[in-house]
Image (cartoon, rainbow, N blue to C red; front, side, top):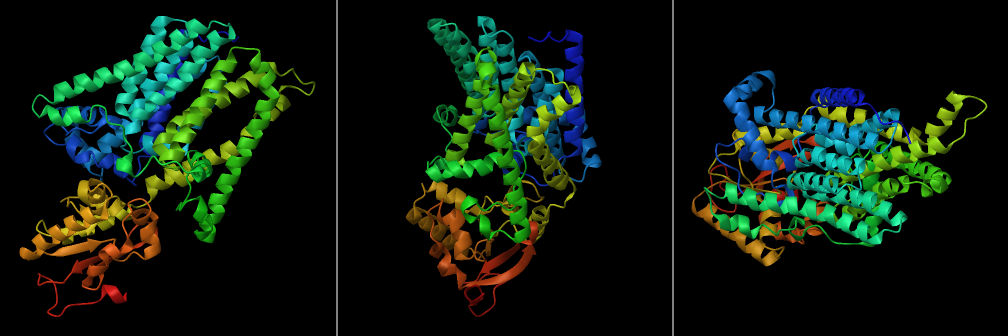
Length: 572
């Protein structure tokens, strides 16, 4: 067992971790904005409280709203408008996420040190998580998972420091519950904590005490989360109707039926998602369509996955060699907990979406803990070599070389690239905002970057009629969707309003099927009646040079339509 770090030394290291990570993330604030984050921008920067947001990220909009109120009252929001060319609120929330990300790494350092990992190993763990694609992506943008990380990791650290203390278990579980109130999947860390506590009792054949200890952890986490849900809804519903809050109290997020389906092939796809958690895959179309990528993109993605596969192989060999030593010590509990947590994230990602980086934040943290404990424990058991210390350390850390390459790819091809490149989708949304008028009707995907930016970020904003949202609202029933679309268009024609289609009529059937057909169950033919009566208004270039076309529907007299009925879209 190592000598525990002194309080002064540990505080100094935590300060350096936080300050260094905060400076890194603030300097790399992304120019490519994630829709899951900026969709809350209007509500968090509005004068009134946000609407109920569901259980998956219950506290995020309310805490963001309070933070922006503070920035407004202190005048910091006005100062920020002169310091950045981005929307001030967006830059502010990105900065908050950078600080949450830095705090999460400080909590990780604490967890590693209290798990008997050396100071060098703890710094290594901070680098692995902090530079991984999944973590770096969200620490430099305004998405909800980052606010949960400090609390859930701190909860695990509290439990690890005193796993047999009932007070530590209740406090640690409550902190995890607080983290889960920001992002529900934070509850997954209970797998790590439960194994850390339960396996220690199991090794001593104290089955009853182990069951009680693990139950206390779960009850504390779920109890704290439920209390926040109940009291939070009670407080924010005072000026509103409580019914909307009560209906969502026991809601489980499944993407309204779009996600959460099991297919054995998804377990293979999740391996690519695991690799993507450490370095970003480019223009990813799915494992089954890997060969459809351009040669340069294909070579990059194959190299990335190859590095990750090599890492898994080398770490597996290391684990096999070190297993006997770990089985004789209590570290087997920590190692098993980290491995189980990562495995749970792997299965969850295969059910939800293989490359969904939000979920993989937990997988990255679990992998980091696993690697640091594995290599720390292995180093302790290795005898000194006659050739000296440098060679022994070189051989010891060699299996992590592929990981170093992946982290370098993440920093350069991910963090730096997102910081310095121009946001072409934002430019497209800005152009659309100038062309569209409040009386117009625009039909778009709704989940693509340009139309999402158009609805939430640019000024003035314009809300498209989203086929994704409408299909979800229709319960994925084509006939209900078609009825709603016909009603919308009939009302627009009656008022002689202009009707536009953006990023839809120019899709071919193969591209349409990737999401609209396979996920939404919406056939390509649903828009056939409008293709032959649409004219091209403008062609714009989005991200990666993708051409996006704005069409105007001219099957009835409307401003901007020619006197004769066009058939441009059908012959494109």
